[in-house]
Image (cartoon, rainbow, N blue to C red; front, top):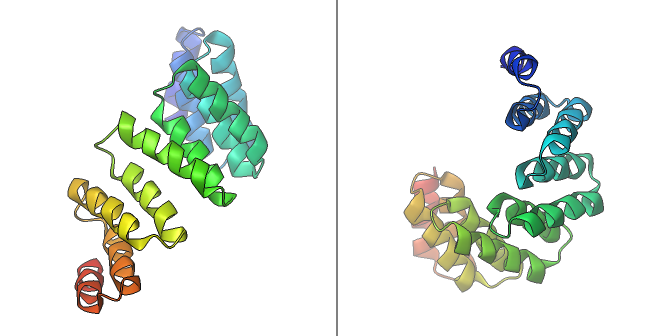
Length: 178
């Protein structure tokens, strides 16, 4: 795929999406420094939330969360409906145990995109981590309505029921997860 993107860039050096896609291929290959170069090239051509968000993901993968958050904030300022940046920033908040802000971002993801299970799972994880198991169960159940084959969600629901002392329901969902 990288050879294809190299050819596209040679044909049209102003095609920012080619740089972004090339950068994503490099990122998947764990070539973070090279990926960052291509995301920055895309950004020089056109300031898009996608290019900015991708730069943030490189910093997040490197463990530079404050710099990653800077780029996610910037992507959100350009497009207040760019769900990926909200989810990424919410993940940073979650990892930093700032559950209130994480929940705000994950609920924003849901308000933008009600059809992606991960948005509900992320909100459910905040509620689970803060031991609000009924609320977590609600969000995990909504995720399951979108993707009823996700064994992690089934397992999470089982844990919620277990924490709510509803052991028969818990076993039912653990069995489904297997």
